Image (cartoon, rainbow, N blue to C red; front, side):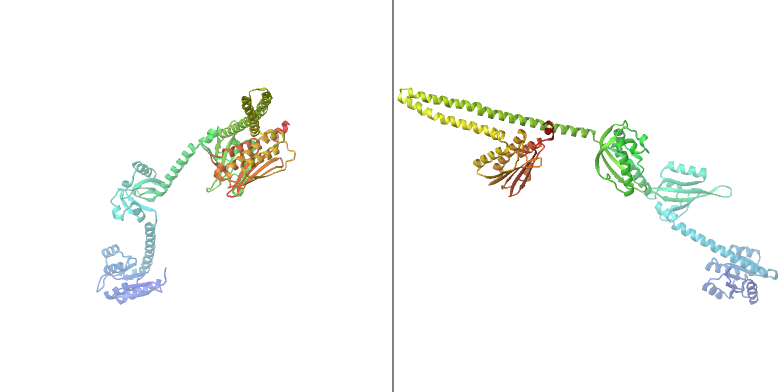
Length: 618
């Protein structure tokens, strides 16, 4: 209790005032007293400062104790007031108590001692009232400021009290507009209302119940309800109170998550590639229908099982486990984010080729890894068929080329041997006729016959020369008789005669036995190169080099023309270049063509001197 009490004594009898100070001073020696003996002094006293206690007489010359009580309570509602009087009665005491009087003490010697105890009790009650008011104030502040909607509903279903958060949540401006509405009208779904009220009737409490409610504007919101029934001593429900927290955003997020999960599920279910997710221990926690089909395993039978034991061939399992360990230790691995081709295993143990991409899934908790697996058995089969087809086409092209060269050789021999011999015989016959002409007697006829006969040997010589030229162009005899170097040298001289373009030829072959196929291929590529120079290069000089580099025969042809362009190399009219490349490819060789604008074109041919298969055959 505070030792310094500020006490106001309202009494117009000085002896009674002294008596009150004496009795109170015994218990509260440090009390500070102020007296009011007129209405003006009372008004000034209660208007100037708060007092810890007011002692008043009932019968005053200028007023009465109840009027004083009301004046004090109006200004200081929590200030305790004791009536210390000798003129009151029981009715007055009851009336004063109803007006807020704390105690009533009679001015009689046997009651003087009770004044101090009355002060004690009044001050204690004032202290309790103050604590109660403070608690109520804190409660009301909490009630008004808490962001969760709070409510109290009467037995009739009317809203007795609601905090600002609830009014804002439901769209009502104040408590008065909310009070006439019965609580059950706020429920948007009758089934939810029935379930909640039934639970409240049965157990008297509802926790975390989710329901939909109408706002004042008709909009529907989701809220989480916590409520309880308050009962009186007779176990009768007097009120329902609880909280309402809006969860519309959470519900929308949950719905969005559900829709996202549904879309993800639809994507997983409709994906043509196998989608498999494993945890940090290598155990499967996602296995879509495509994976079931590809690996011939049911989803239920693989969930939680180690991936390596189910779909990875035994020869690759240790590699898989080591790779997973490295990825967990360093956060990255050699396969993450890359598309690779590897081998997988079906339920029956059959291995098959797959295309695999592995990504790390960044979520809270242990890492997850998702693999996208595509069965490429059909693709590999098609690629093999394509390779086989290309090999067959190349073999066919090689065969056709060989047949064509054989046919050319045969035609060249026929033209040279048969036609040449025939024409030679014709020439001999004509010579014989010429000798016989001397025996003719008719001079005029003899002269004409003689002139014609003299013309015919020249014509026959021209035919023989033409036949030889044709035979040489079909296949130069030098290619078979003296080899590639001599044939190239002959072709260069013929090219210079025909075009006037100067050529410089260097060769450094040392007893290289190419064989007819390689010699023919290089020679035909050389011929095609010279033809392209004449047609497209506008060159005045050509440099030819024929040499041996390791196990390769190298032919380089460089001109000083305008330079071939990239478009010309890949255009639809570059079939001659394509034929050159195809000839070289059939013999495991290559043709490289480099053009520099305004600085000419260089054609490089590289062909193995002997293929490995041919060495084995030899």
